[in-house]
Image 1 (tube, rainbow, N blue to C red):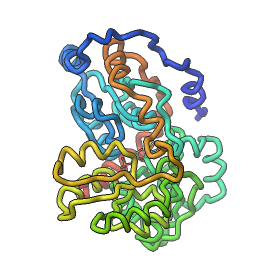
Image 2: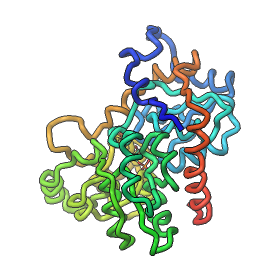
Image 3: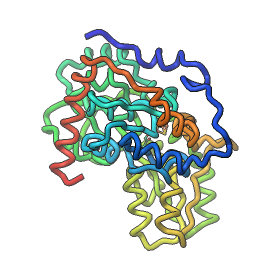
Length: 336
Ligand code: 13P
Ligand code: SF4
């Protein structure tokens, strides 16, 4: 099957994407988006890392697994995906006959970009006896080369579903991979990729913060590096971190993942304090620059004009669908 270089096509887009339109500041975008949802029988699926305004207009807010599950069962005609490219691709693969639009087609992912399809194919050829488990944060090309997909919510169960004598390649996140090796005792071959946001947290600053807030619990996403995970009181996907913060009795949390999740944490537990874990520099590097390319204005425009639309190769979609379906089947079996 030919490699469709969607990544390259995406990067060639002009700075403002397809839509170089000025939106009147007088327009009530919240009302307009609600109107467009009804008019077009559209559903807005948003990841927790989206800005608060986008989360507030979404029909469903979730982690990568929840978003894939919602995409699989939606009856909407138009899927508006407020997230990054690989997430929208997953929605399209599960709904090849539907139109999938996203506010900014350039919203990529450093982790997915770390594993170009042609390099991953060569890597895989070195391990002919291994099966491939790929984290959903990868391109459709890498999915098509994989046996099964996982997310941070179901990764442990997916790894454990593989017979113990079966060797495994895990791609593309080396941090999640190392965490899974530790949790499951499986010796997996890891692709050397990482998320630019989850690698930026400063162990030194987190340690100081724990001294300053002695009652605060550190909760971390498994994409973080091992020394941060070692300090964590709880490790989980964005949904798991949110659920933990709701049920746990502590009143303060240091949150080692992208800052967008704090919006739902604060809404669910208004009396609790959530402190973003500090990055190494004085930057806002714990904001994902890809996720934050999407804005409410761009969301409105993409619904109004149904652009930019995600267009994918049919053969690629067919090949990438199998390992996603396998993941969804196993997740359903475990009630995830
Ligand atoms: P989850 O959505 O599985 O928590 O993963 C977080 C992430 O980095 C998505 O890009
Ligand atoms: Fe990719 Fe990391 Fe951004 Fe998630 S937070 S989209 S893994 S770069």
